[in-house]
Length: 424
Image 1 (cartoon, rainbow, N blue to C red):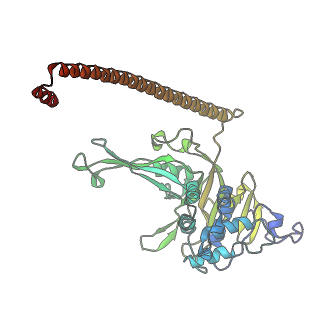
Image 2 (image 1 turned 180 degrees about the vertical axis):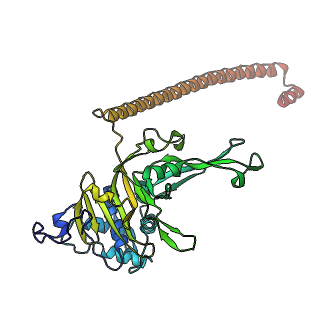
């Protein structure tokens, strides 16, 4: 049976067409030995058009040495060849490259670990470091650690960043929502009693408030639901509890104002739309990864189970909330444009703001140039006045010299007088 309850047998409507011809927006990927984890992640990368656009700007031909072991080179190749029906295995070289980078074939991997490893390889192996930072910035969630003493209000807020927002579960043990998990994660906690922290100002252990505050939100928000944890007996177990999530998400509706740092840009968008769900089926010891994806700009959902691809409804995606072995493990949201409802009012306001900044800059530049011109004019006048005074001084010296010379000639050449004048 398929995820939406239909038979998995090929019907007459398929006419023997390959999945990439029947569903041009989504294509299946062959499993080459426990590669379902990488296949599911690749489906999310394929649905991230922003990633492909940045990689297309990269001149990967400059990478000649160790090109076979360069992960971003092969990732770019996958994203470029995925729409080509003549390419039967567009991801095979990518899998082999990961295998040489110790993400082995025929070994089970966690999707979150492979996701972070790919981002690290992009940063380390791309020779265009500026472009590599742009790619990482797609997923970067910047936060500051709020750690404040209750007694003296001294605050320690070092900034930090993450590319994967990992959320603990079991807030209600059975029925959770993504909004509850996010609100709990960003909620400020009070540390008191045995949890008191040492305050540098008070020079003793005092109660503290502790939590995270948002500095900036990413273009692509990647959320991991922590479904695996160690049991009391020391065994890894999977949490199949239900976690309800929606197609849209707004941080302003979830978090209080205190969650946003004072340095948070107010004009930055806080609304997101879901476009990919990485699903884990099975137990903590053995499982299988699949993906639900939605193409950029589209509303149709597709289910990708390795090489099998089919269109599904939102109801099929909701079946991964939990309560059974097949559960959502990673959620990828895309930030919506900040344009408001009102015929482009947001763009108009942004244009006015930019125009005001441009005009203010021109005014400041004009004032700077006028100030410089006045200073130069003042310095020129002072120079002319100084030259005038110097000329008058030299002219006076000439007259004084003539007067003395005449006196010298009238006295008849007094030697002592000449020596005395020489010492003056």
